[in-house]
Length: 205
Length: 205
Image 1 (spheres, each protein chain N blue to C red):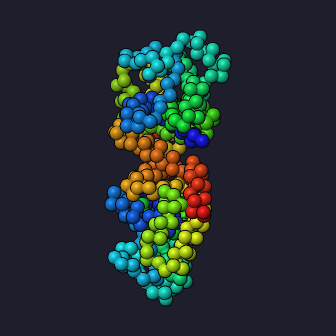
Image 2 (cartoon, chains in turn red, purple):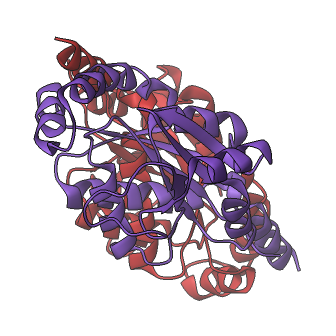
Image 3 (cartoon, chains in turn blue, yellow):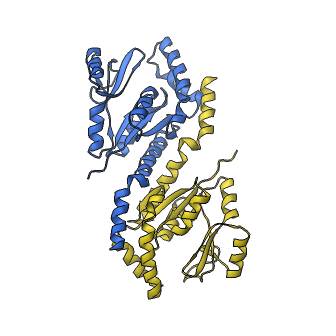
């Protein structure tokens, strides 16, 4: 029997550095699969369709919603973002460990749908650092920037709902901590009952 | 406020390689402290008082029992083994992470006394390997050997009571898995509420 894969949700406030840490993690652990989300927003400079997101039309997205084809979706800053349900479920059933990099709104929905998921809150090293990262991103209008700052404060207040907190002070350090979490989760007794039974049988015989 | 240390219990059947793995772990992570047990058994070749065990008389040990001075103790193969309670508690209060290397009987008692402990079951790679390790230890009488083999089978059946299972196929691999478990446990949300509150305050202000 193939062991079910782990769903690892990496989330946190805008400006916490989710994208950078996830890229570093996937480079270090090439056996992990990143779930690619669908979105209706325009690609930013350097973003590729099918790699960063599947960039789809609003009509396409709303059809998928109607068909129940999202594990979670959210409407943020006037755009849709969503995780295709069937893609993730197929990967998990094949024993692949899947990384979901999503905002906190999405993570809250995945907590309801997949309580067996591993929920990691990526935290900026300080509130001040979070502010300057959001400001320095520089791709936002002033209105959008203020909305993001206020949203970030609300998002940090969701951290206690997660399983783990990883402070993103250095990318390599945050990456290694997430890798340790994944390794430790795989060693949990509840995920190894087949192994225990097999060895218990061998000792008896 | 000093953060409370973690109590990490490394346990498993006789012959699982607890001693070797713990030594490797302490070498890799010198910030960990090994709790030294008291015992009434005779030192084996190469064992040092105060390093491997505190070797004490039966009278001394029974006095300590009477004074409630053991976190756990057990009477195994005609000898006492016990973990001095105050030593461990002082270390944890100082924020030190303490490793307890104990047999499964002791671990069951620590589970009752310290439910916040992290219980790791060190498993030999196979039942056959476990048998040959016990036989090859060669420090036992035949009667003692048979008792150990039968006890090992019972001990493996206790594995589901632990938090984590680490298969000791290679010492370095088992050591690194335990290090990952310790790191992951420290990242658990429940152990970081002070940090979350501090950052939430900073973002708001």
